Image (cartoon, rainbow, N blue to C red; front, side, top):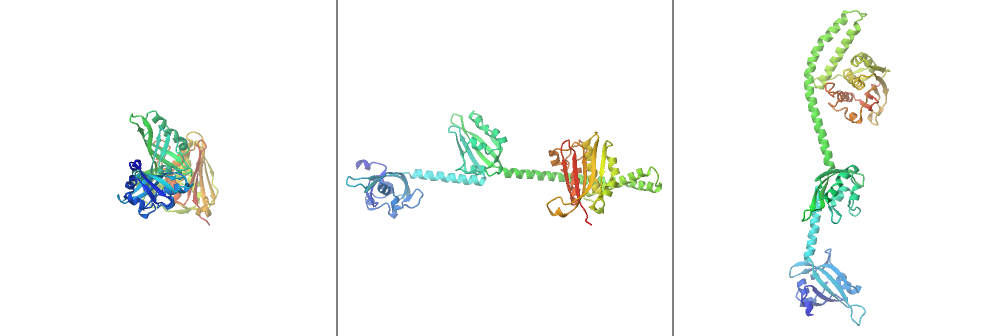
Length: 498
């Protein structure tokens, strides 16, 4: 008994009813009660406030000594909390219990329990769990996860947020180079993983990297990783720690912002160009007045069979078309209002054909197929600008070699599964045998100021204006082209039903 009195661990002897029949001084000190009082109390006494590791109250049969007596076996490292009235706080203990057998009985009637105070360790463990919880919540709010690899153990460690970013479950996915490679885009994996062997060789990893991943659910995301090396006391790299962040939405927003800025820039350029064009158009209009007036006067003064009359008529028509283009420019500059009229497309194109012929090189042959169609409502001047621009582009695509440009019309039904599906359209087609366009050029062909022509050959406004004109008529414009296969442009204008 003297030896038991000197131990720092508490020792109590309990009977099968839970009563304390013996305790050493350390037990009284750990439990915060006088030594004599312990003989008059049971562990299931409410004043003990005994709880399990989960902080739920313990039932009588769950006490370590009672489990040892009833199971006839040892109980090791049972964590329980007991209220200490002297300290006025709960203390935590690791309890080992062992049944005691007597010679006269097969079943044990007593058990002794050895109590070790683990309050400091328990509180430290609780604080650690709390800090981990706070870190997990902070990472979730910030959408930034953490990851680490230890070269000494080969262990990879991911935070909960990192698992969420990669779209995998902790209990189903084990982080490693092999498993990560299945998530990262193949084109990005080699540059990303190259940091690991480099760091093993003592070279600092690249601090920042962005790469694409594909989650198990099929979602594709962009991840930004910021990494740094972990070093031991000798300065040797022993691992890598990094943060990972899903920046997909940020990159999309940045691209949208750049697109808006580009649109604003184009709008500002168009506005400035419109102001300039408005002034030029008025001066040009004044220049055209004598051309139109004198050509009309000459036509009225010469006979119908005069061989020069077709040339004068061509000058008059060209001047009138130029006047219409001036009106287009003034509309572009927001100074004039275009008036629409009902007209026949075939007649319009036939009258326009001589001007088209005069505007393109002689090495290019024009093939016409202009059957009768329903009428349309629109601006002949604007559509003249569109057709002339398409022929100009075809001539540029054909170059100096012999080539063909086809001009045709057709009447078709709806072209979209939408409200237009019941409407009829007049289709004007301009196709050529030129060099054609790549997909990259086709993707940008309607952008303002985009052009493949050399400096001085065009501003890149033609197709963007053409697209706007066709759209303002309630129509559509479609382009089909491939390198060395020519280009076909279909313009669809709503027909006027009889």
